[in-house]
Amino acid sequence: MIGFFKSRLFWISLTIVIVASTLPWYVSGYILGLLTVAYYFGVFAMAWDLLFGFAGEVNFGPTFLIGVGAYTAGIINNQFGISVSMCIVIGALASVVAGFVLALPALRVRGPYFGLTTLVAVLILQNFIVVFADLTGGEIGLTIPDVLSIDAGVNYWIALGFMTISAAILYGLSQSPVGLVLQASGQDPVQAGALGFNIVKHKLAAFIVSAFFSGLSGALLVFYFGTASVGTVVDIAVGVQVIVAAVLGGRRTVLGAALGAIFLIVAGEFLRPTGELATFIVSAVALVVILFFPGGFLGSVLSREARQ
Amino acid sequence: MLGLQILIDGFAISALYALGATGFTLIFGVSGVLNLSHGAIMVLAAVAAWAAASVFHLDSYSGALVGIVIAALCSIATYFAVVQPIQRSNKIPNEEKEIFVLTATLLWGIMIQELIAYFFTNNAKTVLPIVEGVVNIVGVRTPKNEIFTAVVCCLVIGLLWFLVNRTRTGKVVLAASMNPRGVTILGFELTNIYIIVWAIYGVLAGIAGVLLGMFLGVSSYSVGPLTASAFSIVVLGGLGSVSGSLIAAFVVGYLETFTAYMISPAYRTIPALLLLVIVMYIRPQGLLGRR
Image 1 (tube, rainbow over the protein chains, first blue to last red):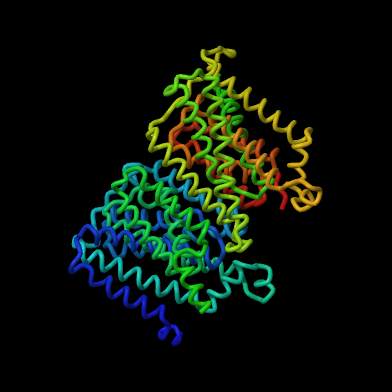
Image 2: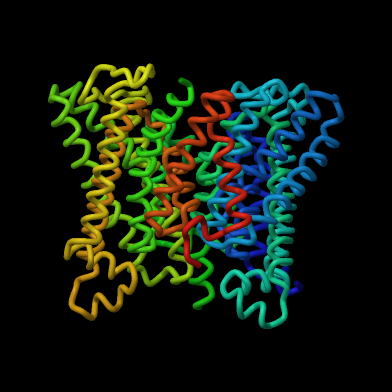
């Protein structure tokens, strides 16, 4: 741990965070808003990477966990008018419960079967949101009375702080002995089991941590937008974006996932003048990265450093 | 009467699902690839058939043919541009190739979908049916096109069975699915076998797409649901088992039709999804799958 504080990665990250936290003083509200969303997405992607990169499980339904957290927080705020911070905590807890319920059947299966189970969870959630339109607002979306803050700068700092803390916890976890056991059980479950580690327990824990951060971030995002809709927090397209962000940034790096998410959101905005082709271009770039630089942004940098 | 209506409509839908899923499971059985651009290829076939008929004024037979040929070409392109580079890459560890193929084909599907939306808009398109008119089956008015769809699907699946089990090429493909290395030692080029399989897959997906376009209409929004339904049918039936996929297609097709008629169209897909979760829990290898 002490070694980490002396490492180059730590100082680079610290510098980036400090520079990023000064942005509200000289950057327009529009860019701040963009980055705010990107930071929440970064947490989605990091939480996903913990499950995929380390536990080796392809979760096709990150938006199931995000959506449960976001909608629970939104609905209780809408129905009972409980304070925002309380709603966010309850949302994150609901997401943990949902993650636990999903993990029980899902962890019995592996590979594509696991992927499909998680994908189906998203489709079921999506259907239920549309069916119980009275409570959830259906396809139109849920309007939420309270917001985090109306000041773009404050919103930005909340998002940045949240992402930094999440990154520190998730990265620390991934480098800890628990992270190593997870990595081992992802790569060779039989051998890891033979060494006496309880693989299912470790994977379940990873799932729950991932669910907690996804749900927390989803709930915060909902209170930032002031609305929750299928298109922003549940749709499979959102899940695909999270997955692409994590793979693009470099799997098994955690921090890379956040970089990938910020890149995706900012690139999508820069490409807005190209109109409907924007998604095409982003997907094409992501495909090229996957085919030719499978380590992703951070993966290639780190491996070059390791070689030196 | 409602019972018969469900029986007829359910059969047509199920046959269509079966045709779509057969190609998907064939690819998985032979090369171990789950092609998540499946829905995009189906929609591409339908949109190509639609464009050939309404933009280039071809008759509906040639239109359908254009759609199928384009789907086959796109399928072969998928193999060369996306799947083969990953399978041959030495930067990607072997145990992670599966997830890379999943992600890459997913992205490829999104690219196709976005191109379709860009050139032909997101609007729903209905391909002009080859046969028109309505017949009365014991009091149930059934479009002839629905019967045509069911008949073509059954014929094509039968033809595929014949191709795989009774011809030399089919037997080589079958052998490649059992033991790729053994087939290579016998002097068959594995890449050629894969090209054949992807071409067959493309034709199957193309026919399914064009029929779907005539029967229900497609838009670029149907890409995701189509992929998801093929994926779930194939997993429900057991990955790589063609007969399992056929049974699963009929289970899902009838379950959806029944729910839509008896409860509400809004709940259409929910029972099938719940069934899938239950099957995953009790029998993770699917109905007829091997472990």
